[in-house]
View 1 (tube, rainbow, N blue to C red):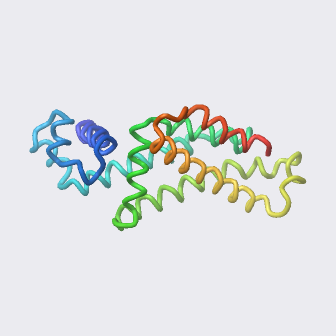
View 2 (cartoon, rainbow, N blue to C red):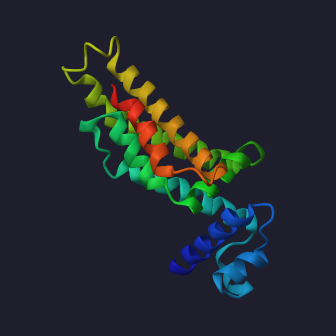
View 3 (spheres, rainbow, N blue to C red):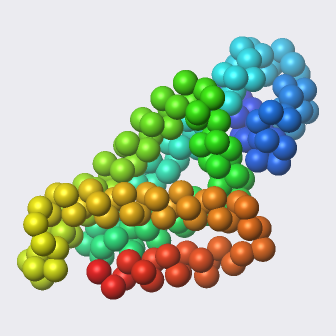
Length: 188
């Protein structure tokens, strides 16, 4: 399984650098330092490799959330945790490309939809207790579960926007941007 993972990591570097469409299997084989036979023994096609790397990249975000979000400290800390977990330029560029391909690839759409739903659920679960805290319950009017879900949407959308921004604007100070995003949530 290690060789399969190494090939996928090499493919992700190629995809991040050149995009899915411009990356050939020959590029991936060269980047992985493998023979064609070795790569094709693990992945039948470039499409399979794209889906595998997409699933891996998105699963890493879900793992960052399922590994225990710092819920006692609220939405700003949760967002900071997820921003830090995703702040690798290769991953950010790959995720942006994955999301751009979703409308054209039903299998990628399924992968993205499933992983984003899992990520949202982990965030919402982590925020449920925070929203129910008696010191906040007056500020969060109505259904605390609905408030946790709404905050999960804000965090997830902020995370996606952050990844788009740091990918498109490579001159941006990603730490300063992360600080500004989390700062907005600190007022809660």
